[in-house]
Amino acid sequence: MTEMSREQLLAVVRSVYAESDPVPEGLVERMQATAHDAADDLGMSLELELMTLLEQSTELVGTRSEATTRSVYTLRFVHGQVDLLLRVAPEGERSRIDGWVVPPEPITVRVLHDDGTVLAALVSDTGRFDIPDVPLGLVRLRLEPHDDRAPFVTPTFEI
Image 1 (cartoon, helix red, strand yellow):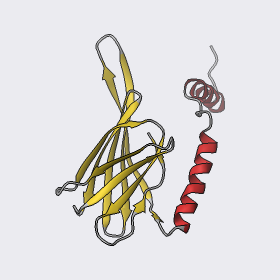
Image 2 (cartoon, rainbow, N blue to C red):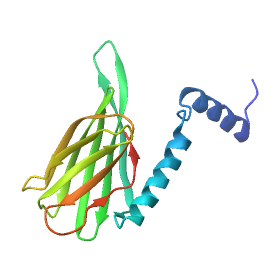
Image 3 (tube, rainbow, N blue to C red):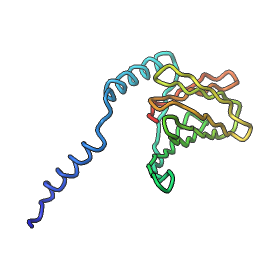
Image 4 (cartoon, rainbow, N blue to C red):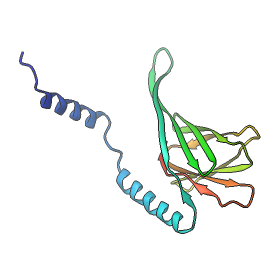
C-alpha cells in the first residue's frame, strides 16, 4: 500500500465533503439578494451592524436508536450602546431563537424571514426574549426601541 501525498489526501477530503455536504441550491442568489436588501436598508437610514460569530457547536441529539446532529449558533450584534446576544438552535424543520439585550430596555424584536414570514417578541425587563418556531432559512432581526431612536437591522444569517 502506497502513502498518499498531502495534495492527494486533501483532494479525497474535498470530494467527500462536496459529496456529503454540497453548497445548497440557490445559496449564491439568496446571498446576492440579501446584500441588495442590506444596501437598500442603509439607504433608508437603517443601520446595518457588524455580526461576530462567537461559537458554533455540534451536539448529538436523538433517541437511542437514531442519532442526528444539529448546529447551535451563538451570535453577537452590537449597535451603539446596545449589545444583542443570540442562541439559535434548529429543531427539525424549525428553529428557536433565544436572545438577550444589554442593557435591558423596552424593544420589540422582529424576525424578518426570507419567505416573508415576520415573527415578533418583546424584550423583558431582564433583557431576555425568545422566538420559538422560526422556519429554517435566511433571517434578519429588526430591533425597534420603544423610544424615539430609529430601529436597526442585523445582517442576514441562515438558520
